[in-house]
Image 1 (cartoon, helix red, strand yellow):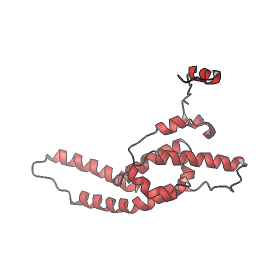
Image 2: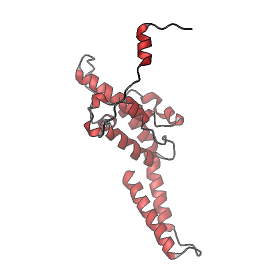
Image 3: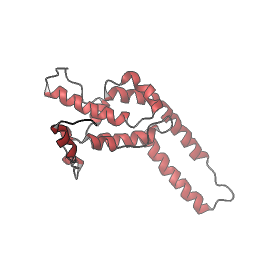
Length: 177
């Protein structure tokens, strides 16, 4: 049996308390619960789901107030490690990297392995890999929509309903490319 010192025994008897804010806007970004960040898991990025993944992940990044670290609009300050400004940037960038990296597939890690120093480096690399394919996919979906005809066995009302759904889906898809 392994002996524990008294501090370790006292720590093991305590139940950790995690407070969850009622509204994320009320959270100071310095006190974000990393457990909450890690629990924001979505379908991982793969080669075929960039548009949907990008939409979901940017919402999560906005929720935690770190989207500007991903887009590069919050520029990294001079690396004076004693500076509060630098430490704040470093912590927020780390949260953004964790959110992105925890939500991409193993295969996608190969794309970002060399760009993992900053959240914006990871994001730029993922955009470079996936954005062009997304434009092509939007063009293909548009063409499929235009060329879709009603099958003889389809009810006209059902066909119109399906076309309306496809139109809305296509509009959302193109808006998010």
